[in-house]
Image (cartoon, rainbow, N blue to C red; front, top):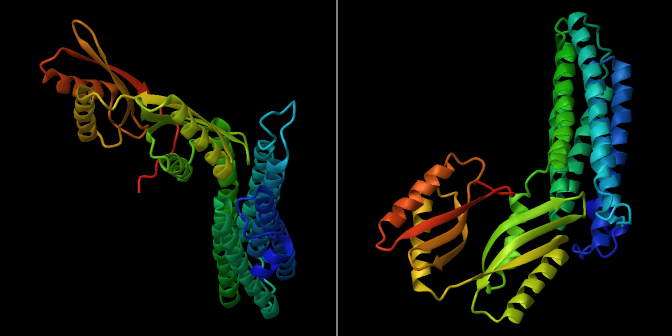
Length: 394
């Protein structure tokens, strides 16, 4: 079924780097999710009303919230394809964030109402009109969600889209929610005096709250400016390091203006003895590759590094090792030596990650201890940089 849908609705499905092909994949995924979740919502509403089961009604609205999430995603893909204009030179992608906030508020309202009804069901239980055919229909909805999980995982892996992979995980979570609902109904059938239906309704309402919180927290992070993901950092660095002339990378910044519009900058270190025109050609090619492969408008600043000075290289190596012993997460870059008649300044930048317990004073003390062992009069001029990327600690 998945392969048939792809062949039917995605033209040139193997050209996954093409923007129009990715848009078609995204549209197919979103529309499929909307249709399936609406069908599940309708089926579960019918079952819930017929059997007077609050837990089934809660599960139905859980599917409705998933439907809204698919609508958000569909807007995102469409807005990403809409070109920038005079009033919005960075595109229209951030409209998706506003829509997401409205939907998250709606999800919270629905969750609260279902929680209230479920608590009422626990306090004053009402009997469930049990029906084996309707219970069987509820079981069938589990298989629909399992197919949706496989469908989104297949497309997500094919086009390397983390949002679709996350949607697949959400579908697997929904299977658990429905299983809890079915279990509660069976228990209520065999033990009618215990309000299992209301208890299951509370559990499902909590899942709905978590879904709304997940959407809202993600949007707030995007609006406040979350760091670029470690996966994207690795892809950017891999493209740049594929050029052997680039010997160091630092000060990476990526600004997200919504789906399909990211603008970034990064510093690339090259050998100072390299021909200027040749170095510029390498940098220009790396910028082009990042834009073509990752769809990021990247500006690369070229930093010349003098690799021919053995004294400079020796000082850099000693300080680098001392910082690694102090805290392996510390990063040092832009190391240069300025020699004067009375002393020598060693000028460099250090990045202290946010989750590091190392202080600036500890860094200064460590570096000064290294320089104190040298016969020359050396001073460290340290600039402490801020890290704007997310790092994977695995």
